[in-house]
Length: 107
Length: 118
View (cartoon, one colour):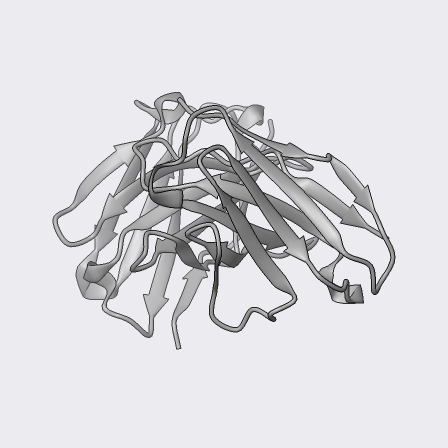
């Protein structure tokens, strides 16, 4: 069973700065079936990135995903105030569908 | 547009069962798997299981096998999740999520809060 480990646990930045979030899998992710979700308080998660680097519909281009194998990165090029939230990575396309524990992006 | 609307909050006693619905619109219900996810207060996301609405096949996370039942009603375009033997550890927000064409989870319900308390 693959385990996803996100780092850092909390990231403190300011609007306008660049954010780099990491997700490491204990086993290689087949077909780069790795997604990133954003969750704000009191809301359901929202899909940002799938297939490791494809932006979901309506997601601004300041969000980008990269990586392959076991190491993946979500980059937010210039933080906007609405980007401060919790971010989760998830592996899909397998019989088990693990999530990372989340990275809290705070001002 | 695609929408997933879940049933309202539930309060249950320990040992009871709860059934939550996820009513869909804006797409062909049978063509997409539906997943269920749990989020305990202040915690992360935990996958529970999926259902293939077309052929009524299910798959459950090991942790929930034997306690969770996923069903669907194609005529009502609705998926259901039922959990039995509730304990306080089951107090959480529960979400349904549609699996999209690339296996990503592209649409989510708004969540249903289940509280288990004596």
